[in-house]
Amino acid sequence: FFGFGHRLGSPNAKGSEVHVLHRGMSSPHGYAGKPSSCQHSISSSSSCAIPQFVTSTGRALFLHNYEPSVFDLRSPTWLGIRTHTSYAKGVLIGGESILDALQIYTSIRGRTKPLPGWTQRNGVILGVQGGTKAVNEVVKRLEKYGCPMAGVLVRDWTGVKQLTHQHSGGRRIWYNWIMERGHYSHWHALVDDLEIKGISTGVYINPYIEEIPVHLRSGRRYLFSEAKKGKFFVKTRVDGGNNSNGSSIIKKKSSKQQRNFNDDDNTIYPISNEGDTQVGLIDLTNRNACQWYKQVVQSEVFEYAGASFYMADMGETAPILGAYHRPDVNGLSHHNAYSDDWARVNREAIKEAGRDGDSFFIVKAGYGRTPKYAGTTCLGDYVTNLKKRKDGGLQSVLNGIVNGGFSGFTYGHCAISVAVPRTVNSLDNRTKEMMCRWMEMNAFTALFRTHDGETPDETVSGYGDKYLLKALARWSTVYATLAEYRIRIFNEASFRGYPVVRHPVLHFPSDEQFMTEDAFSFMLGDSIYIAPIMRCGVVKTKTYIPAGRWIH
Image (cartoon, rainbow, N blue to C red; front, side, top):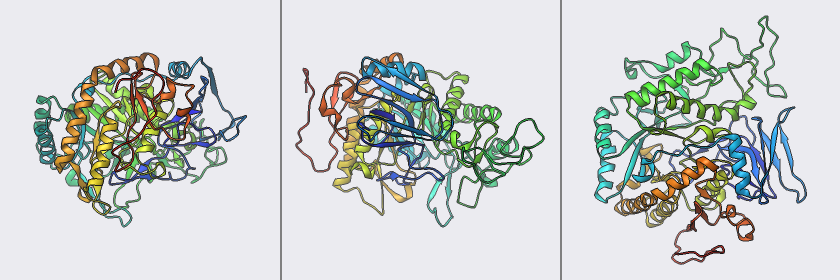
């Protein structure tokens, strides 16, 4: 049994119990992160979990339901499915092979469009932050080593907030999707200079909108006020709880439709525990809120910031105990559905702006229909180490990428963290080896991208190390060299639904070696076989190669 989305566990789920409910990965430093629990939820497998599997015999099953579900695969003779609803709807697929079943499944649920050609031919997409000067310095250092660069993804374009809450500390970006001109005083000159060099600019957004201090309100617009006035936020329920099926318990009103919040009430669901400012989550069951947010993306991300792409994060955070605009929606089902809606809204924003084909967005969370809308899915930026799977290391990321491929996520990837927390480690030889192992594996995936952590003040960055810069330039060159091969695979993915990064069992379904607990190798398309090193200090190794004629 393979699939269930970007699950970090063993590709072969036979003998296990799989829980399908979104949750995220959290670590502010981009190092050694472990899966964290989602408030008000049961245990889950990733922020991109879906109720779908395909078997080694070419059979597949998926549920249309968004409610949490559990797949019990522990019995050798039967499987059990439990879902938190009185009505379940699903589809059984019978194919001649795994690839055949996957092709049928993606034809029903939707397939991802190819990424723009510049993401493949031009090299690495750098995760950078710290202001105009810091971004320019990183680009110049890599130019010195001849590193091909496709883009820079600037996370802190909205400015940086100093956290004062006793449980938070540190800093994070402002959730206000307006250019902060004090932090990036020469932003447009930066974008123009990068474009001359063939480097595209990207930014970061999520569905949160935050109160900001008066001095940061640019005079152009104040998003939090607009969203609050339009009643676009997820609200606090009037009953404060759920009944057994996840719907709200309130007295019937005189209106024709029973709602789980008062129309006159604009109490925002408390997303943040920082205490000093309000943070609201956009309610995507509200069509007016969706139209408003699309306009924000088009005017602030594309037109004003001049971005060519962006990270659309936090699609897994819809509160189960929140109150939503649509009367037929309850938080229990919408928690998973939100990621589909989030991907759809962002796809529509790009299409309506006339940017289809040139621009794309990255999501971390997804459900069954997300591949139809999203440009690519990312397994998060916070799991860079070489530890065992249970510690969220390189092994778990490889598992997650190939698992997603069984579920229609054709362009799954993971960013390479080039930062370590000062309190945990420094850039010693072991840490550099770890980062290089991540680079060499990711050079053979769908997108080659780095990430420098959420809190630069608390980390040591690899962008200042000559050895790591040389390694990044080398593997970015390898990645760019394979561009035409990958583009051919992309076309196949859009027409047939085959993943770019594939578990070998897709092409060798009868080979028992590929039924092991963890993925020890993978394929890029149907012709390149890769066996990454996932341990420190290894200079010689043995690996299994499937039947056929191979050239090293």
